[in-house]
Length: 217
Ligand code: SF4
Image (tube, rainbow, N blue to C red; front, side, top):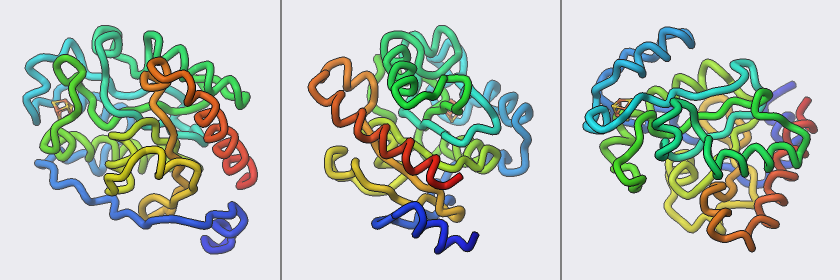
């Protein structure tokens, strides 16, 4: 199917083409690595100061052939301890959110913008994002997902290069990068734990994700 026909079939009415090479990271030589080599490279990375305070890197988890890629912000306390993204209460909520549209964690791929935990779970600094996102870009390229679901403000702002409120960014389908991958924005599960009234909107975003994903297959 032609890309334009594909986008039309998905009823993508708004999108923003992103340059996958927006990061100005120091050299990671990650652009030609396979999954295992990339994982090894990340595990040894000392490109930014976060390596000094991490317990371990948090690479990503899930099906390397998944249709759906979920991108969050950065590891928190439990993720840093366990080496896996989205564990703890926020992770349990993400698992429940996926289940609401009939998907398991094992069927999707989950990664973060940063692979190391920022101290006290502070927002990632711009230089940390610049250093780390070539790894995420390589993960996106290796996975080539049919749809990306960005959870939370930090991931949405990075992927869209647009710093408006999450509320104004959700409920739309964008197209990301050279592959024009459909991209949907929703709330971060940790935010939803603090603001349960927005769970209904997140569920609508997940339904949009499901419809978009399976209309395309
Ligand atoms: S956050 Fe990313 S760039 Fe910084 S040390 Fe960890 S893996 Fe390397």
